[in-house]
Length: 186
Image 1 (tube, rainbow, N blue to C red):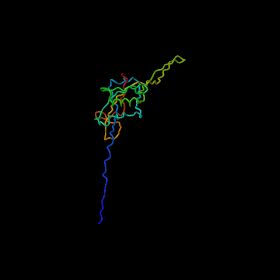
Image 2: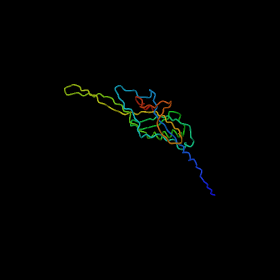
Image 3: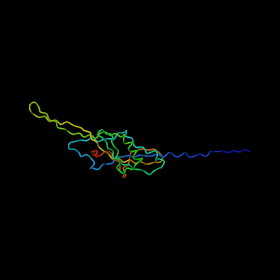
Image 4: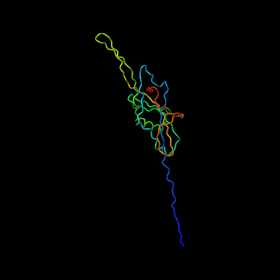
């Protein structure tokens, strides 16, 4: 008589992944009253965000709480060289808000190409024979501006994901900045 027995070790499910967050960012279109007035005969090179601009990180201390999605809307005040000078909340500024702090920390390092205005400037010169020569030369200046952004913080399946995407009302984010960037209206 022979006896055979099998022994198996019960398998354990792998531990759940640590909680992580996703951040979504997009520019908001400024009201027409918040934009530069287009100067007659001027052309504008619109500011472009640097590809190196890092999105804010979901505050690590809040991941374990698995909070509902959080929206932070801010106005970036950008100087004439394209550096973010100030990050101003567009909604109530709750003291110690970790999401707003994350946005401020990330956006403080953001860079943009400058908003450049080019105009043809008339130059007159009297020639030796008494005639006047008129020449139109391009003159470019860079301008400070502001851009409004919306950041969405959420947690998705415990996996870290950061992307840019959908607008607040489900519409697509604008593919290009508004016709003329908004001035710095401190």
